[in-house]
Length: 244
Image 1 (cartoon, rainbow, N blue to C red):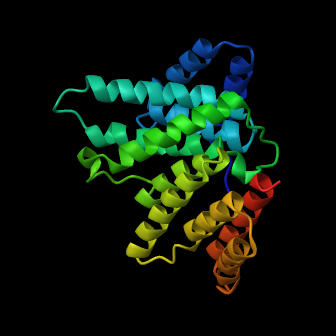
Image 2: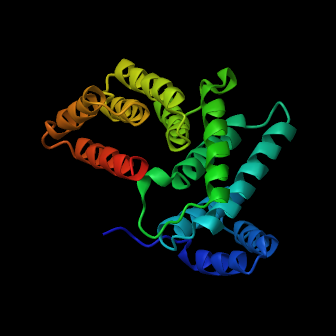
């Protein structure tokens, strides 16, 4: 059984402050936790840890977006003003990770129970997805040990193209993600499935439906592969959400 997050008590107060339209007080409260006599509790850990609780436990996407945007703003500002001798990776790695999380959490294709994605959340997620890919593919960040792969960065931008009904762009980006996965020795079926879904949504036909179904069958054939089973359900959910 997973242990409760140490940021749960902080999240209780933060979500209440954010819902009272006082983000400044919420940020100041988290900063006060980060300045406590605990070397493990810097502001990045306090803000990001609390944000995860807001989303996963409180289903508070609107409040999570406010907090996440502040994290991204601070990290981006710190990178711009950082001296040449600073630790770039200590800033760019969480910046990329936070952009990916925001983009993923605000994408409507999960149909996550209890989560409502409104126009503001969708816009924030789309912006974060673009920045996530920009950071991951920046040559200056080539040696950074990000917590997400290049394929994942392409996927999350493609996911917004899919939700925006920009099907041709979605196919191109999902296909790039699948190629990156195959080059890394993976099967690439998830992104291949999304590309097939985008083709079917763009032009419903027996042929495009069969191509999508073929990917589902290939995933189903990977008996014992929990990831494959999850990917298959993910694709079916996206088809339900965007094909309605």
